Amino acid sequence: MIQIGNIFPIEKLTNAKGNVSLDGSAFTVLYFYPKDDTPGCTIEANEFQKLKPAYDERKIRILGVSVDDADSHTAFCEKLSLAFELATDKDAALGTELGILRPSGPRHLRVTWVLDAAGKAVLYYPDVVPENHAKQILDDIAAL
Image 1 (cartoon, helix red, strand yellow):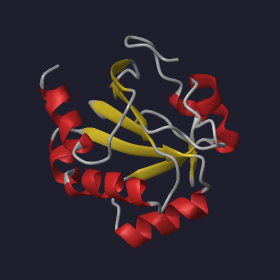
Image 2 (cartoon, rainbow, N blue to C red; image 1 turned 135 degrees about the vertical axis):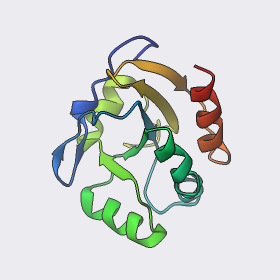
Image 3 (cartoon, rainbow, N blue to C red; image 1 turned 180 degrees about the vertical axis):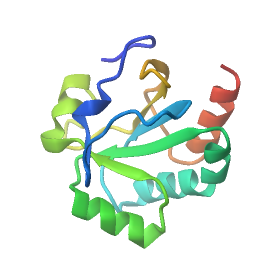
Image 4 (tube, rainbow, N blue to C red; image 1 turned 135 degrees about the horizontal axis):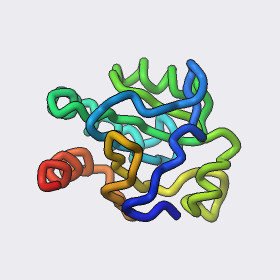
């Protein structure tokens, strides 16, 4: 498990362009979710999308992560008009390493880490409820 203060292994995630890396944002929100296009995951994605202008204003990158592949992510983004990235945890390898897989199969639990510009974990949310999570993160980052 990544503790507050540890460097997060973001490079173990992939997107359509290859491995994911830090992009110079002040903060990166890595929100792990179970599956594209399911009710709770749709609520959570829509909450982030609704607040994306506030995230952009504060130079905060939003990065959703699941075990779904790039094609699934593309379809999910198009369906919801999401303007932020979704990344793949191929074969649930990182989820396994982090201990965040659901007992019922290779799907992530709903957890979130916030990283600083250097990739260090500064916030962790172990039991996420999709509604209002995106707003809570903004408030918590403002309090850092």
